Image (cartoon, rainbow, N blue to C red):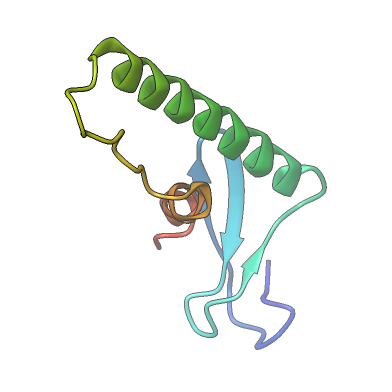
Length: 89
């Protein structure tokens, strides 16, 4: 299959049961119908699991006087890292 933008041959990679077509020349990424939905669903599951782990770890240890709970990276930072796992060609 050829890239719709630059007509170079597309390369196909499998990431977490999603087939991603990308162009090594223009760095375009092309997804078939439903593949973006799979990526979003996987990202949301991953986010929920990380939130649960962080909450369990935080609740497991009592706070000392004057100590504050640790602030974890915002969800958008974790989500960005998750999406980088898909698109690190």
